[in-house]
Image 1 (tube, helix red, strand yellow):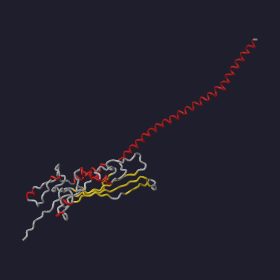
Image 2 (spheres, one colour):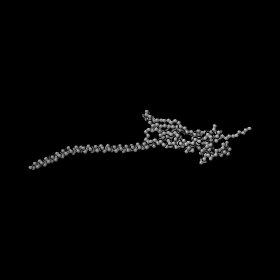
Image 3 (cartoon, helix red, strand yellow):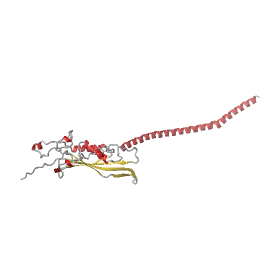
Image 4 (cartoon, helix red, strand yellow):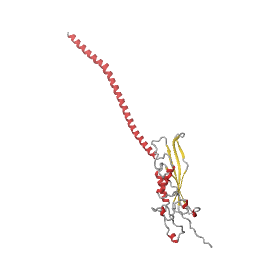
Length: 296
């Protein structure tokens, strides 16, 4: 009986050992391998997530940079004219002369527009971007300081001003001449500077010149090149209004046609209609003194 009991105990212990061995061999080892595999996968996923997080962070920084570039491009695009409205630009430029006190404009002229395209860096492809340019020419007159002009009348209505009688001038007049408003170089340069600074990306001063009339005043010439840009791949929408695009002057149908623009022909004395020297700034035409010839 005692042997049988010991055998039973040994058999029980053997069975327990076999179960433990079977657990280790068939359950614990495979599960450990699965756990190790999962740990490895987790490590890989965490590493991948870190890369993705870094990519997202870099992408956010790139998006910020892209938006910054778009803002800069938009600022540039808004300074470029999409079209050239010659009559509006001429009005804008002549207003600069008027603003700076030299309103006697004797010439406004434009040349035919030219078009230019850019050759891409591959030296074979022509860019779709198109640049147009128009040359504007202006001439304005200074004054001689001895002839009354519209700058001298002040608040006096023009119809109340007495036209001075033509005289040769006495010795006293020559010693103490009436000095009227004298405008010239300073006013012209101030206007040119204003034109140059107002829209420098689009309006470029090409040349200036000065001519002595030989009659006590100067004539000033200005050439301006105005550019517009046709950009198919714009970042922003073109601005189709503004000082250089929208007409703000008097409607053409309302422009007076009674001689207020220019000197009425009827106001010019007969003696001046042929050979009298032209003073663009003169408020009144002055005829040479007519001397009576004594009959013998």
